[in-house]
Length: 227
Image (cartoon, rainbow, N blue to C red; front, top):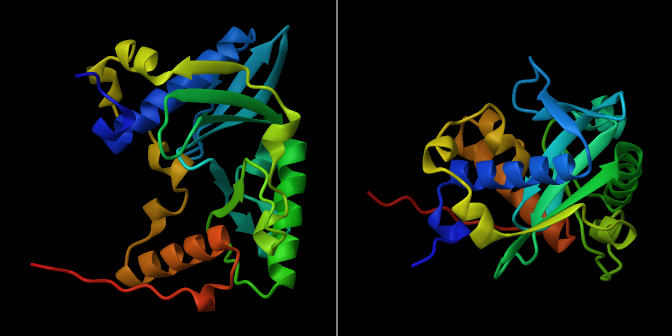
């Protein structure tokens, strides 16, 4: 039986999608070198035609991407440091068959995150510094605060589309198990910093509220631990 993304570990899925992003960039003529000392931000120097720029690679399996706001939304962690944002996303969050790779100017991504932050703040939603704020790649037509800033995919074509079965066939198990700094940060940017159950629950409540487009106070979560 052929493997699917669901059969892989979290680190294997992350590695596969990052490799797809790197393949997409390489197909466009970019050479890549990891920026040292960036911790979990997954930032690369990408060079094409003699010009080198900094790019953030993001992966997503629900077609949302996140960056953490800083200073009350005046700045964005990682996003403010780069000129390009490369995103590897599944074609469908429910039944993925392909990984699509996009390359966005960081200025466009930043404008969308600024607009989304402003809309959510105006709506009374709680947005914490250094916690990932999520914006949908697809257009959200609900007309709520969470809809603002979505739909960037309507303006860009993918730079690469890869069948997941092909990626799995080319993806050595040994490499997949080599954990690089930042693999969790791309899909769930804040989880590595959470150390208590209360922090995890607060993050989950905010994440659900952002997707649903409601205030965090409207989300009620129950936790049950069984021994």
